[in-house]
Length: 433
Image (cartoon, rainbow, N blue to C red; front, side, top):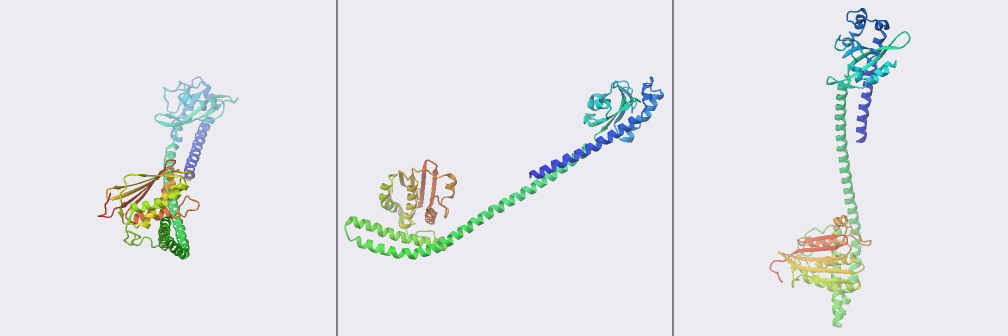
């Protein structure tokens, strides 16, 4: 675009210079030719200022036809005192008086009286732009005794204005075309970027599918052994039974989590995902699942010096269209993310309450917060800010909440912590306080 504008300016400047030079050379030739035809003897005639003298008639014969034949405004002979001797239009009010051109084109007159033909700069007269050419008349000794001054309208200026308008129009059309091409290029680049990201995501999904299929087979067998061992431990002391129940529950949850990952990798995650466990119709208790998750992480809170506070009037129970294992997975992802944001300890606030027909769970931390540009991408598959993260935990948590007709909202401010809100619809006929 800069090149186009520069080319238009250079073209205008070049054409203007050429037209000006051609016009100046023409005026200078006319003035010099006329000056060369004038006899210095006629200028010394004491009756030269008389309209009836032979000297005046001779000079008028040379000067008079110039305006008509050379397309001039006026022509005159000016003596060394810069007084008009003869004017082409025989104007008595001008002849015998100081020449008006001497003030309008003073530099050109000075050069002409210094024995050098000259052309003046443009000047405005009679509502138009004129230029004057002044040529010296020399005597036998080479002294300048008078000058021939001719005046012409700068006729090249209208043509130059028209050329400038044409160049401006061409430049604008060129700039518009360049802008359209640039917009198309930017759009194509953006489309290519999106396509590249889709291809990258597809490759990641394909790789994850192969990995998950292998992991699902390798994990299920150890989980079965762990679950069986925990059931046998549950027959011992009450404390051991409680811990064994945790092991059994978490083994079952892990088994279902592996199955969900496998469904997601196969592209089956969206099928039937409207209610319950990916469309199985199972329901859960959001409050009981939250209590169980907090109990499960009690040791983790102590180890990390995290103070846990419960806020709000928690309902006694809250039936929602999402099974308990899925609810635990959602809570675990959100709480563990909060713990990662507080590596040196902090406070975790968990609130639960009802808002209309929906249950609202709020998990707030006092961590370092999340930058705005990162927050916008949070929850996208394979996007993570952790060195060893997969970028799927929060993505699957959001999918689970949305599959039950709910919402997962994350708000954060750098240096002020993060607030995660889970909103789930209550099952009709199960509203309790």
